[in-house]
Length: 428
Image (cartoon, rainbow, N blue to C red; front, side, top):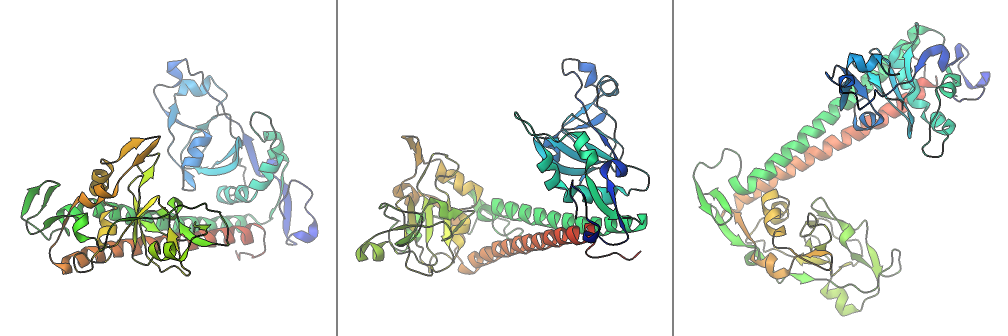
């Protein structure tokens, strides 16, 4: 319904009209003050927007920028002071991204900003611009970088409500959806920060508020009643490397866990490759639920020694690569998931990564270093299980917040399509 071409009458509500963006808004460019003139940038009085500010801003309303210009810089350049409610539309390189100005500001020359004219609701115009992004991109041209001109932007036609009140109502509904999405993202951020704080403390100081007496050990201060042990002392069997026969990305063959399967403390079968192995290798290297895999080598030291828990039993017989070290733990010594969660704690991971050695462009960690690594644990299994339960709860909260964000994002996108196109009408 919305194109840079002629909009057919049959493709729009009978009482909606076709208007160009030139009729709905003033299309305004920007500019950059001379960088060699200090007084154009100091004092930094007016927020000055670049496309990078737009892509870095996750919220619909932009109020902060990395740089600002002075009043003198505004006067002596082609930059224009844009009012609150302007749709900041990127027109160069990254074409069609937009945010709503939350404060008076100026932009550089990579914008074709839309200042709403009288009778055009600023929120409606902002959401209309979002639906027009494919048009902006299609009209963009260039060799060094693509750019859509202000002339082309002005000529784009859109089918819009003839009644201003309906435009306002559409803008209000979509704003409410965006605000709900912003609140959900804030809850997700808070939940992630809580988990981070918990992981930084719980394996060295215990459950918050639980312990008052502490002792100094080789790995730092820990609760008085806790014990220091080696990873080797709680292993069920030996640490074991897998195998690495010639692999292929698709079946047939036996699925094999590899480096790509380890992410954020988990090991999954999503990115397995496939190999041909004999029955003995299949049995020796078989992956099972509860196995913990440590990445033994990587070109980046920040990734070596990271680990992932295989939380689900593979649907078919699966083995693991020799780039991974498999660990299994004694259930009589440590609670389920206690060590895998410990492995994600910053202090423990830093210690074990410090043992890695560099050679041939790779940082490597050995089984011996893993077995000898020290950690602290409560002697009571009940306290270990409490710690695991707290982390489980934090992870579940994050997952619930992620699901809420995803659902609200889908809802907002759906509302954007059906309201801006008139498929669903808003009563006014």
